[in-house]
Length: 240
Image (tube, rainbow, N blue to C red; front, side, top):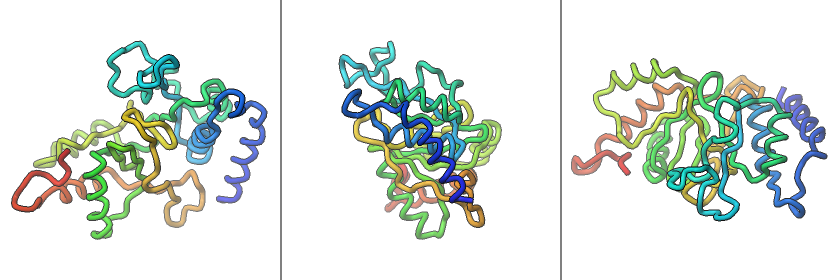
């Protein structure tokens, strides 16, 4: 099954090869188009291009907000509702905007995520590995890491958080109606987004579209436990 999906993805790439920008001519970034097509076709994750940086000043966002707090790394035109798995639309977007960041619309049938500061995430993953906790894909930026989880509703998340005595304030939740910046996009804080742990098929699931994702309850429970017991009764291990 994996070989069949791989051949289908290659045929899609070959079909749209003539539409791709040429790096020497237009500053194109084929890696971003490849990543967007893989997300959309192999994994069935709806994607759309981020707004990107200003052509006049690469340190500023291309959106109209002069004080944008996530420069380049958010939807603008098209808006989030335009996210799609259609390879034709994906190819058209990145042909016309070859350096646009890759955004995934979270929730629905797509993964959700729990994010936390990079340093805390690195320590937490070591601890969770030692405990035998099985994690899914992990997206890393220089400032924050995002642990991908199975889709959840806002109601389910609310019930989960209500049942907890204490949840580290550094945790952020990317659920229905949200989005996540994916590799190999440029991070809003500088540097590049990367896979700390790449997506992998689940046990007994040869299809690449059947990527294994943990449930949000299991991940939050593990992170809350990992945040407790700081040396000397100090603050959370997951603090900024």
